Image (cartoon, rainbow, N blue to C red; front, side, top):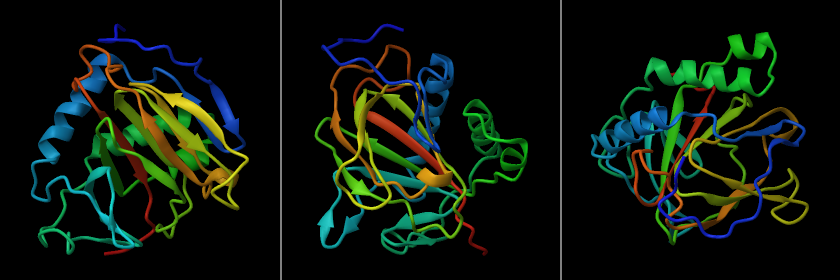
Length: 223
C-alpha cells in the first residue's frame, strides 16, 4: 500500500488500547476502501448534503452526512431539520453486516455480535485543517459498541478516559483501512482528532486528500 507521500510519523499502536477499545490496522482492503469512498461521495450529494454542524454557536471544522438517523448536536432525527428538512437515506444492509464483522474481528462474544444492529452511521469528512475536540458519544440511548472506519489521510486520534477530557489518554495513528471499536467500559470515553496528516492517503483508496471516517452506532431509538 503506497502513499502519495509519507512524512515521518511515529509507530502505530495495535491491539487493545484500553479495556473495551481495540485498534485493528489495515482491516479494510484497498478495494473495500475505494468502494466505500465511492458510496460516500454519492451520499454527500444528498438528499441531505454534507454539512458542518453548529455546536454551542460554533461551526465544526468536520463536515458530516448521516445514514439511518440524522445526527445534530444532542439529538437524532429522521429528517435533517437543521439543514433542509429532507429525510436521510437508510443505512444499507451491507453496512450492518460490516459492523458485525468488525465486532468479530475485535473479539466480541457471539451474543453481542448477534444482537448488534447499527441503525445509524455518521460519515465525517476531515480536510487538512479539520480537528475534532474531545467529546463523548452519548446521544444514543443504546450503549452498544461504536464501530469506526478510516479511509484516506492518516490522523492522530486521541482516546481518553470516561471522566474528563484530560489525561490519561492515548494518542494513536489511524490510517486508511483501519478499524477502531470501542464499547463496554470504554463506550463513553472522551475522544477526538488532533491532527490530519496531509498526503498520506494510499493510492487507490478512493480519496486523494483528506480523511473519511465512518462511525456506526445503535441509537436505541424507535420511529
